Amino acid sequence: MTTDNSAPMTGSIMVVGGGISGLTTALEAAEVGYEVFLVEKEASLGGRVTQLKHYFPKLCPPTCGLEINYRRIKDNKNIKVFTLSEVQKVEGAPGDYTVSVRTAPRYVNENCTACGECAAVCETEISNEFNFGMDRRKAAYLPHNMAFPQRYVMDPAMSTDDREKVKEACKYDAVDFDMEEKTFDLKVGAIVWNTGWQPYDATKIDNLGFGRYQNVVTNMMLERLASLNGPTGGKILRPSDDKEPETIAFAQCAGSRDENHLSYCSYICCMASLKHATYLRAQYPDAKIYIYYIDLRSPGRKYENFYAKLKEDENIFFIKGKVAEVSEEAGTGNINLVAEDTITGDKVRQTVDMLVLATGMQPTAAVDKPAADLTYNEEGFIVNDFSKGGMFAAGCANKPADVVTSNQNATGMALKAIQTLVRR
Image (cartoon, rainbow, N blue to C red; front, top):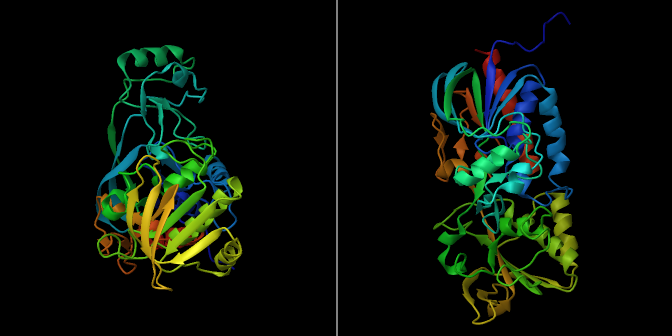
């Protein structure tokens, strides 16, 4: 009863990555009294969740989880957010790190009210990476409708004429093309890496036709097509001709469980395709949906019930067999696929309007390793060394996971970071 259980204020924690698990790590640590530096390489927080139409288990829109977290960040003076920023170097030991951070210029200051006048006059267009290049956006842009901070970005590719136009159009003196890249150091006692994941590059899977045939898309591209703020305003249309698809096939384990690509199960792909089937069914009640799989994995009672309900749909067909070959039908853009039904032993040949590749989840750290003394497994996930302490990985930087599992893991790593400071 007489023990002082208040959080010691002698150390700070850095959270690298502002996706859903990074937000959770930062908030859990900050709300018990620790100073947190949240470093995000993109112009906005939110990560992959912002690109989803819905996420499990309740099929909530991203705003469901992000809005309350953004409010908590705004209300918490212990959290300092650095967007467009990346860690360049980490020196020191647990309890005493010096981290060098580089911040790229946004060319927009805090006066921005997100009024959109700059975008209205800007004529330069760039590929919209938020929508995986399926459309284009202005070089003066808001990252997306849930952007935090709610502040525009000026792309360096903007023409000289447009720079003059947007600067003149801004009533709040928020546009500043004199901004420069800057590097600074932060002293922290612990670092949690929430560097997240990226979809596996489907162009590397030669036999499935992605990048050669327009109507072969990835699961994350379909997610954007289904989203109201996506390239088609939420209408799922096939890319080649904007046709409403009547037959859609899903190729599961596209790059996952494959020694030539990702050797592991990416955990979320099966449930993502089942979710996508509900998107299609809502828009196209009579569409035929074919799901080709090795094994369907629906971990937990809620996910299993979700799967069981879809199996009752007479227009959703599950074929146990991996898609082996893909080609395009001349003149129509339809997709021909070949697979083996491992139950019957028959070779299946089918033609569909669209093929969706359930591409795997690859840790970002496998492609872009953090500049720190970290341990990785053979697939590029960061391995936590709790005996060493000081630096930890959370969420999908540590293992493939859904949102719920990522958040649970992030809470645990926030506690591990706090323990580093207490034991310093």
